[in-house]
Length: 478
Image (tube, rainbow, N blue to C red; front, side, top):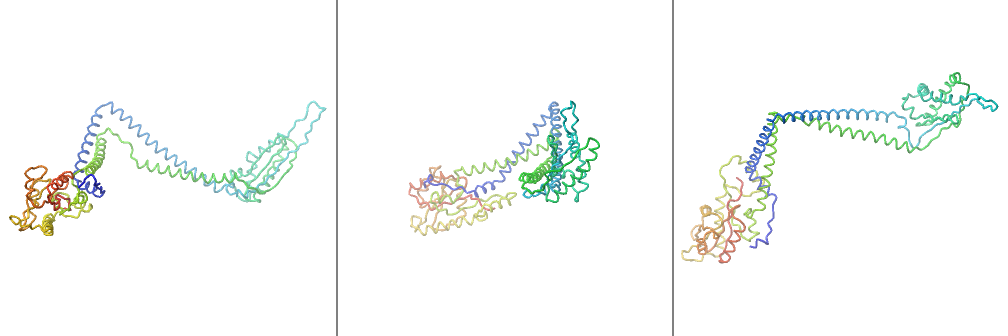
């Protein structure tokens, strides 16, 4: 009977049942909080909207929020369109670009240098020298090459059509003014492609020569260091990977922006909160939130009270705590209630083994159980009346005990008496002492463990045999 040595286990299933059992109280608390929140919100906003200055500021804020909301949607649409256009262009580029098709570990290159030779000589004995036209001639060729005429000549004569921008990527032109030279370099997927472009470039330059001779002066074009070779270009490899990765990043960004835009579309436009309809809608929302918050708070309060309570919650704890035999558990019979189907559902979910309709039958079974135990103990002692006196006492009203005894049939040879609590009524002590055996009667959620312990201590001091305990008012399936 040492309560301090006993550690009661907390059952989560029991806690949840305890919460659901009081669903009516939870709903009532939630409705009260919802009404307070909704009415308070409605009243507060009606008071505010009665102020013209407040209405003016509210109108300005609404216009600002609406403009910002629409601007956000327009910005997202533009960003999505730009990303789609950029990705499409980049994918088309990666598919058509010659540089993207080149194997960086087998890159073919073709190069040559064109040297411009003139008959210009410096005559030391002359004060005035002839004009050196070499740079002018070099610049004329460069203008022809860079401005697009040479590229167009190559495009017109290529065996396979190529866009100008892709041709410019693989054909590079480098001038050397000091040595009057121009270097041409071609990158391609194979040797034949390099030679074809380089040959056409030479043809175009030679076709331009007569016009430059006529316009500027005589000169010769000499080709030197012409070669075709294969190489490994790791920079090209990194560049190709970066292009492919960039397309992937564009796809990811496009998906993210699409999700943002979808979220924006689902979100409602800002509403005028100072109109009667808006105030009513907002108050209804507040009531709904208040209802949910009230239900949660009420459920938490019920669970907290259940965990911290010293009241008798579960009859099974009595055996573990005090070593008492639970003779029976008598269900609490409720009056007819509305929505009793929910009570029945929650009771079954909580795993309750008893039914309210079995209350009377369980009381009769308890009487027979007590008689069987007494017979096993050899309790028929043949005292004055020849009857075994049983005292039914506990921390509940005598009326409740008498109600229990009215359903218990002991028959001849037994005298069962309802006795007031020995902790609260002095007259109960003599009546308990006059009895042969004692049966404790306690009520769920009304009797406390501390009271039961005090009763057992008193009865133990009086050397009174406690046959067991009957728990009434137990939760059961309706």
